[in-house]
Length: 222
Image (cartoon, rainbow, N blue to C red; front, side, top):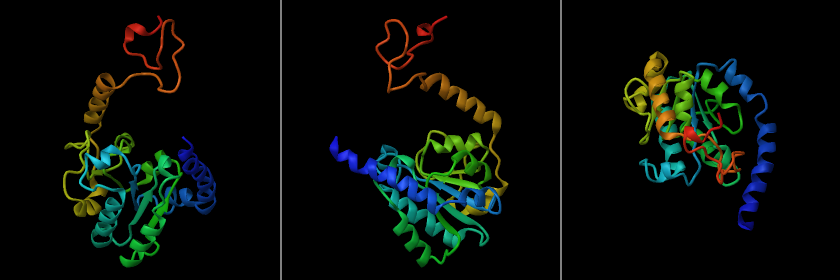
């Protein structure tokens, strides 16, 4: 609808602005700050996973919770990197809130708010990752990043995620490892039982297909 045009135009403009403001940030995180920062990938503001499967109600409450815990409990030499969700770029900006929290918690130079950096690179160099229940959690496990889920997440289980409190995660993350065999088996199960090949956005080039999804292996061409 026309009502959606403004946020998408805003998203387009902000993408360029953030790229200019944050130039060099990824090089810093993959270089001098590698292994010294915790990554917090945000979810879209109206994600059902936030509203139904977490105790935060809003993304803002999650940000408050994580920043406060980090300020009180995390090692002094570590940094907190909050990454905005790309699909929420045109709808919300948490810059003012994060700057305010940085001031009141005395985190000058240690609290960072970023947007469109290459996520796999960030995960590979993170000391740990904190999510509510984002699918980024699966990517973090894939890249062997220590992970703390603060909401109800399908992958939140011993051997994959940290089962202790967030305040302990800040100190114990560097010594955690992901059970690779458990992750391989869990991921294979998800692929086999919950995933369909295809796309919601275009019809498959298969005879008689009226959708973009392959509903069964028998539908695939030989």
